[in-house]
Amino acid sequence: MGLTYEIAAGRVLTPFFGTSLLTWTTVIATVLGGFSLGSAVGGVIAEQPRKEALSNVRSALIATAVLMAVSPTLLGLFYAWGARGTDGMMISVFLVFFPASVCVTLPSPLLAKLAMEARPGREGSSLGFVMAAGSVGAIFGAILAGFVTLPLIGSTATFAACGAVALICLALVRGGKRGSPGVMVAAAGFVAVAGLAGTPACQYESGLSCLRVAQRGSEVRLISDGTIQAAERITRNDAEVELALSYTDWIWGRMDRDLGPDPSVLFIGGGGYSLPTKLLASRPDAQAIAVEIDPLVTDVVRQNLPLASKMIAQTGYDAAEPRAGGRLGIVHADGRVYLNETQQRFDAAVMDAFSSSSVPAHLATRETFARLQEIVDGPVYVNLLDAPDGPLVRGVHAILRELYPHVDAVAGDLNALGRTNVLLAASHRPFEPLETTSETYGPVRISDARAFSDDQGWVGQR
Image (cartoon, rainbow, N blue to C red; front, side, top):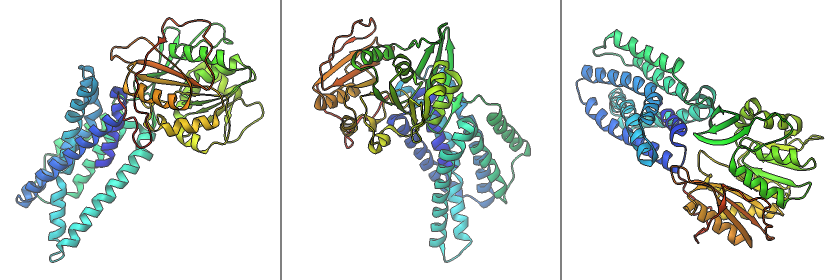
């Protein structure tokens, strides 16, 4: 139950604070800190008279159930009250997840003591069995969260399920003074309401993505982990694919200038399939492979983004099973895994994969781009989200400078956090000037830096 709660905590953070090394480190440290304090306090409880100790354990289980079930609601409240950035994330994680982590561990020392008392003279093996059972339970809880509850019922219901398990454990605590039945009924009712009537953290949720679709005027936006991932602008002319996000406009302008009439283009990061749709609509002889790690993203695009959905329906196919007339091959896999395994060659590639608001570290290394260079004969286009001369931009720019003689870099307007889309284009041949200049994106100077590698890579940020 404790590990299920910990993994769900990391998942439910994403709509508010994204997912990164920082968020997961904070969650793990907070929950483990709670486990440690809970074990210490539970040891003191275990030394109390039996009836008093059992009563305290029952209270801890009831508190665990309520605190676990209310966790996503509390997180939303702290965010609504202004918790932002790294400091806001750390404070929110501590206040929301630490108390339940303490309570869930309080019964453990008493269980160990009871196990040892039940087998006099064999205390060592009894304690070993209790510790082994705890480890097996943690393994089961982690698998349950990652493969079953989070993908199937979502994070809000997973928290309620953890609370329900804590209440079920009350039936196993025998002896001692029993608490008021009214309190237990109220706790059970609260957990049930939290699970069934609580507001889901995500409109669409899988183990990888927390997605929401929003319409603003003529735009339909796909929002992943709180960051706009794609958008379509609805027009009267369905044959015209109009890109809604400014960074896709610049990348497309570059592609339109650099590529021939029938290019084969690899897209690492399917997202809203906006650029593949624009490419195939503009060049009837073009081919594209889009690698998207999460099948849910593709399903949501099919349901909500009409232009991309139409293109997928007309020309999309499973890249593992090519079909006649198929022009948009879809691969549901990690981008790095696909790069390592594919034998196909391409005329160009677009690196536009994100986890929340950051590029996955293993897709921003020298080894990744060296492999990309082996299978891509032409230019490579990269979308990053960072400060114009931020650490991620500098590291990836250094990689491209090592591998390609010609690298262009542009940046857009800064957001409130001082970040923007920084777009890089790398090629073995000089780039021709774009016929139309973007009012949003202009050249940016990037400082020299160490190139990221698999061993010393990008640590991520929000």
